[in-house]
Image (tube, helix red, strand yellow):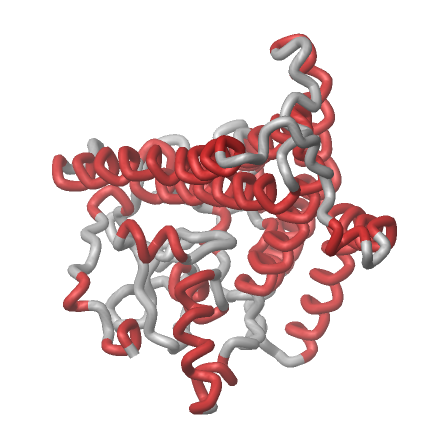
Length: 360
C-alpha cells in the first residue's frame, strides 16, 4: 500500500515549509546577537524568574517531569472514572494495557532513552557540551518549544499518513473511550523511536537544559489536559465574554475539543477528525498546514471501528507479538490498514469546508 500522489506532494510541500519554521527562531536569534548583543554573557535563567526564587520554580518543574505529572494524571484519571466518563468500557484487557503503557513509557523507556542519549552525546559531539549555554533563556525556550513540538507533530502525522507506520501508533487510538489514560497509551516501539525525546536530550547537552525543563513541563501539562475526558475548555465556548480568548486558545494549543476529535472513530458526524488535528502542545501546526478542524463540539464515540480488542501484550509490543484475532491489523496475516480507516488516503478538508466555528 503506497501513498497517493496527492498526499505525497502535500507531505513534501509541508516538510519544506517546516524547514523555514525550524530556521526562523535561529535566524531571529542571530539578528538579535548581530544588533549589539555580542560579547555579553547572557544568563541561562532570566531575572524575572530568578527574582521568584529559581530553586523553588526549578524544583516544581523538575518534580513535574518526574513524579509530579504521573501524580496529576492519576488524580485526574480517578476523577474521570468516578464521574463515569469511561462508560464501563475500561475492561480488564484495557486496564492492563493502559497501566503497562504508562509504566513502560514514564518509568522505563523515556528515562532510559534520555540517560543513554546524554551518555552517548559526548562521544558523538565531543567538546560541544554547554556550547549554547550563552543563549538567553527566553530565546532558548522559543527555540526548543518550536523544535520539540514541530518534530513531534511530524512524527505523529506520519504515523497516520504512512501506512507502514500506522500499526506502531494504532494502540494510542484503539480504546473505545477517551481519558487521561490515553496520554501514555503507546506501542513500545513508537515510544523508543519518539524523535522528540532525543532532540530534547541533545538540546539539554548543548546547554539549554533550563529551557528544556520548562518546555517539557508546560508541554506535559497541555498534552495531558488535552487527552482528558473532562471538557475544561467548554466554558470558553459557552460564555460569550470568553469566546475571543477561546478563538486564540483553540488555534494555539491542543484542547479536549480538538484532540478528542482526533481520537473519534468516525469523520461522518462532522465532529470527529482522525485524519488531522495532529498537534500535541501547539495546535498551531494544524492551522499552518491545513490539517486541523475546529468545531467546538465533542465526539460521542472513540477508538477505531475495526477494533478487535487485541491482546494487551500485542498492542504494547507489536510486531514482537502478533494477535490471534482474525483480520486484525496486528495479526500475522492482517491488513496493514483496515478498510474503514485508511490514514494514507486522508484528504484534507478545503478551508472553505471547515465548519463555521473555525472562523467564529
